[in-house]
Length: 173
Image 1 (cartoon, rainbow, N blue to C red):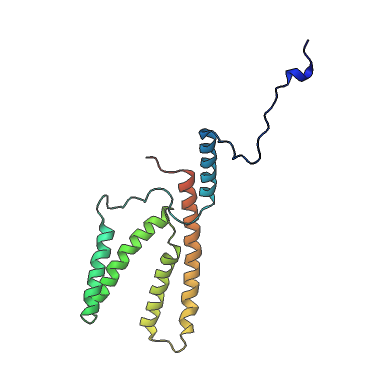
Image 2 (cartoon, rainbow, N blue to C red):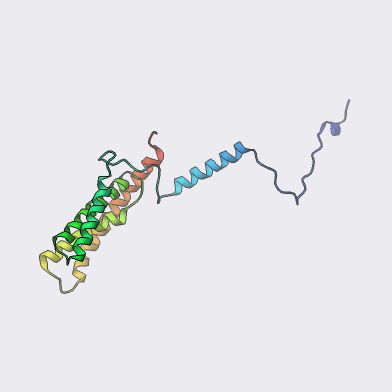
């Protein structure tokens, strides 16, 4: 009968100066996938998945509106203002709002500040148009800052909900 020592297999000691052994590719791939999924779950900003589809199908209506608005804005600016300038600003803003709202509410990319600022600026413009230039300009801030803050809070919550739905349930190819 052989002794206990002979049954044990001798292990080769690793040289501490030698480089580490190569890990099999499946373990490395699994580890990289776990790390990527972990990082993806913590990420809140940036793009997630594919860009949401336009409601106009394959036609780039919003992008075309931005281009036309920009051309009208430049024309109005160089001809001294007037209706072309205002129309250019409005058309360009409508195209930008459509794209940013679509991306924001689908959870693709956060545009919280931009979407909250546009109504706040509109409220400010309405106040200035209705009452003229206020003596203390801080009075405008008393209305605009709460509007912006409330919209920012609501839009941020909505984006995080949409992002969670997008990450948890990615669209089918």
